[in-house]
Each structure stands twice: as structure tokens, then as C-alpha cells.
Image 1 (cartoon, rainbow, N blue to C red):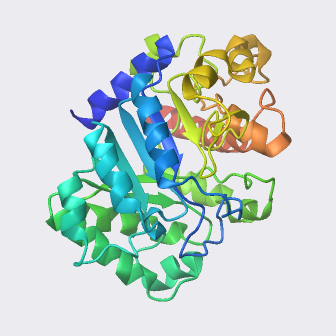
Image 2: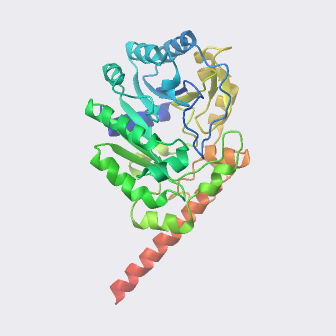
Length: 349
């Protein structure tokens, strides 16, 4: 199945509220110390292998077919290969998110045999200096790039994912070019959020106005709703919890990775009970578009205003306007208006 088809399937499942996708944090432990990390530091009480197997069985029974296995760093778990083999045996398609530091020639054949849909690598620069200023681990750039090439050379689909900060923006074009030269897919994320526990530190890393204008001009940042999926967007206010859930490393269930509203606990409840009967999930999905701060905004049809997760992290109120989206959208609108005015002047001249 092509990635475009997977996305289309996901939109259909959101529309019907069918659970088809789950992100599971297998651990909060990590071997990098990234300056922007959103995770909390609670690494105790991780789900055991048997608990994870039980959760995978419940997900399968509820109709889930796709997993995103994340962390922390998933390969820090000593039983990671048992988990991956069991997920494959259950028939899940799954992506693995990793920094690649523990992928080597010694285990690449084991990973290839498991056949993940794709392996996602976090890359923050096109040079060791920039990348390692963010990971704070000397030598991590070369180790990550080595793992990317090992996966690529062994026939796996590889995605290079870059979070764009004000201190790595200058290398964004080079990262994108590097991904293409390595034969990898590429995605860049400009939305910098507060930490899940409310930390404001990461916000100092947000791109400046001039950087965002440059990104629009050079088409490094695509902005606006995707009209081809309009038929599935009508009236929709929340993505997380409609067709996907997030399961933390201690078994708590959240609406999504970033919308940290706890809707259940798999150590105390079964998945079906949570998915079908959670009062919080039912309340969230009862919300109408008019209940949100973006409802009366004149720019709502052209911006990414449906981000209650960001509003929740910014204000503790998911119905408020997500101010970072407003900031970026104003920069985009001003840029687009200036571009149209310049075009009009050129035609008149």
C-alpha cells in the first residue's frame, strides 16, 4: 500500500471513528538528551513484555491494523526484538521511531527480517555540529547516519524527520537535500510545543518571523488545509481519539501524543471499555466546531487552526485559540498578500 493510500484510509477511519492506528511508547528512557524533548522523565513502571503482548492482542481485537512504536528510544528495551516479532506475528503494520544509535551491523538483519513499514529517524542538522548541539551527544550524527544507510541498504523504507528550530533553520535546505541523496523520505515540523508537563523552555527555539517568511518563499513550509480531503474534514474538530490513540510506557491511554488528556489506564481497564465507553473521549467527540475559539476566525479556512492539542499545551484549554498557529498563519497571510500585491503591480506595469 502506498503512503498516499495509507493517509486516505486514515481519513476514512477518522470519519467513522474506527480504531485503526495506535502509537505506543515502549519506554521513556533515551540515550540522547535533546534540548527540546517533550517527554516527562518518569522512566519507572514500564509495561512488561507480557503486558505489551496483552495490549497488542486487545488492539487487534478492536480492529487496529497499524502501530507506531516510539519512546524514548525503543532499542533500549532488552526485549525489543520479542516485542517486534510478536507485533509482526499479530499481523500489524508498524513504523519504528528511533535515533538509530543502537542500530548496527550486528542487528540490522534482525530488523530487516521483521519488515517494519518504515523506520523514522530524527535528524536535526546536516552537520555534526548542528545535530549534536540539539542531541547533546557527541558522535550521534555519524551514528544516526550510519543507521539510516544500513536500513536503506537493507531495503527498508526510511523517513528523515526534522524539527525546525531557530538554531538549525539555516541547515534545513541541506537536510532536505541530504535526505534525497540518501534515498529517504523527508518531513519537517515547524510547530514547537510546550513540554507535556507544561515546560515553556522549548518555546525559545521557535523559528523567527524572518525564518518563517523565508520558509514560505522557498517552499520549505507548506501551510493550509488540504482541500482534496475536504469531504472527510467537514465538522471534524479532533484527530486523536477518532481513529487513533496514544498508549504511554506505563499503560495510560491518551487522546494523542500531544493532546495529553488521560482517557483510561490499561492496567486497570480493557481497551474496548476505554475506546467505546470513556466519558472523556465521548465528551471530546461531542464538541462541535462552534465550541472552539477558532470558529469565528476569518482565516480558519486557510490555516491549520484545528490544533486543540497545541491549545491545550499552551493554555490548558483545548478550546482556546492555539497562539503559535495564529502567529505562523499571520506571517503566512502577510507573505501571501505581499506576493499577490507584487504580482498585481507587475501585471499593471
